[in-house]
Image (cartoon, rainbow, N blue to C red):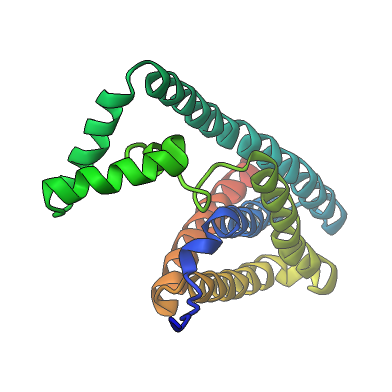
Length: 231
């Protein structure tokens, strides 16, 4: 009896991990940058809170809509290719069989065996075989618009709530440095968690998100300071 070896591959998480990391990262960076920019313009704490709360709601809705539209476009493209492949399989099965055979030959399988493999796979699930090996569409990587939209919106709101919470507890005179330092810490944590979940380098993940977050906050703080002086 063959022994089963169960493996947990990180690629299985790609459907939700990308949307989750992007949503949380955008929530922290955009909201923290907005708060820092408004605070640097000499706004009151209440004005900063209003701006941050509005940024949280608007950003979460924007992320949901953007992810849904974007991933829906991918899903539509996949469906169009599958429909086209379904039609070609019905009209020209032999040509499609030869096409699949050549794919396996290019991967290093002997022509006779490649033809036999293609024949057996097409006998079981012709569309599935062509979707995977010709189009690169699989159950793991297929587009899921609703999942992406909900994940992005939820993680954006969670990420945005972190710098917003700092506004509540930080003294008004120290609002900019407290929000900046705390948000960079949140970003570093997010980078570490995202890298760990995806099986990547933790240090690389932390450095990447922290650098871009620091740059965004520095730019908005500078703009806020200039606008505050002019106004």
